[in-house]
Length: 594
Image (cartoon, rainbow, N blue to C red; front, top):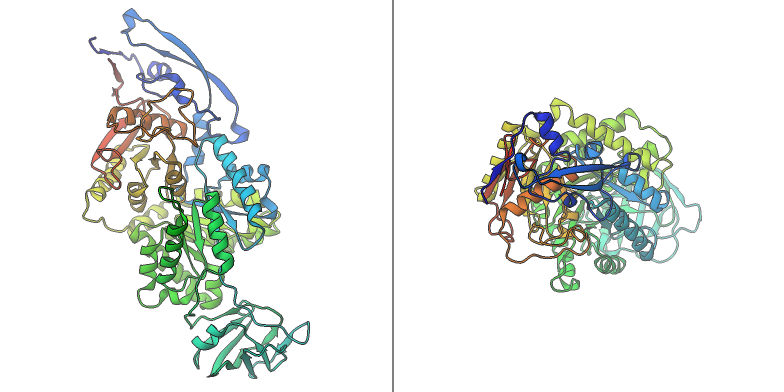
């Protein structure tokens, strides 16, 4: 049949005809997922929309009327307007399904399961709750499992209340199992004694007591007490000047890691990273314990030891892992406080240059453990991490054990929205933007960023098999959201952490829809569609996904699309196209229907 063109009398009639902003070549039922479209509970009122779709010219209209129920897209648009993501720790204050859902709706993108506390079974219960919320809202949610790492502690004292050490006195650490006094105590870590040299500093109880090694002998360290204070049973020891010959993975960590792989976390955070070899060690275990063909979790290195900054260690650690956490708690103990903000910026810059997501963590809104509002200094600290260009900011005790977990998440999002609306933010991002690599993918991404800015597009859409192209797009920090379309839920979940990225999860493996309407959004069972190179199908899918996310609000809204042909080629990006929200068959108010 001869293609016909729908005449459009005015923008208002055009908008009415495409009431939900979707191409006329698609069926109305494609707009609805099995579960509710994403909308906060307070905004979850459903409405019935009528679509008038016709394949004939208006003079010979043969229209069909279809009714369907959807959430109002414009009401949820604000949820996707932030670029910096929020990582929220779960704990006693946030262990119920109701609270986890509230935290998600308040802005949480990633949930952290801290394996330092609680049982493995408790973590599985939390994971199942998160997955149920993910299914309810048809939006990928990432789960990060955080390994405890080695805990270096002193032995026990004869006095149950501990001992008070005076500034200027001498104190010995040794391997003698006898209980300690104000002159000595056991240090049950021979690797510390072996690695310490005269002049090295030891910190006890999070730096409350500071000592300098004067003599290192066979099985003992004689230390000068630089900063006195109370020292008691099993207090932690930090060794800022020494690289210890120990694995970052204790037997407990290995058991927890194996359990994480079993239940399916998306990210694994490795504590006590001292050198690049530590990242290689955990990768080997993941490779060994992951069945062939199964997805592997991404690895996040927690930077909390000064040795990470020796020589080119930081550069190599970032290169070997999938993401970085600036763990400012231990980092602030082992490094001078005035150095921590500089180190934070250096870490963020290195991650941006390599295109790896970076999270700033620890004591961001500490006072909100007890108070419903943060201090001004805390708000400024959060804002600084955002201005620095971090991909995500994290809450620890604020959401895990505080009195105001929901308010803490909401406050972070308020700060994010305020900073990202400031003109200085874009200036800072652009001034530190890494240059492009000499690859076709980078060329396409740079072009897409420039095109989106020139035409005032609403989003950049990237089709990606394993997330490579999407990460390249995030690295460039474009002015608009990045809509990631992935065939695998595991990839979509891992991408949630990256700056500006909002993944969608179509059912068909090559991004097209070749399944029944009822089964289209079966989130946990995507149907892989082999050998499809139908660009028109995947472009229609882009429009549907942008609508579900609330990224478009008008049929003429423009989306810049990047893809790689043939589909399914990891890292390939060789196609760029500008697409109106109404669909690939529409342009400038006219839609062709064959």
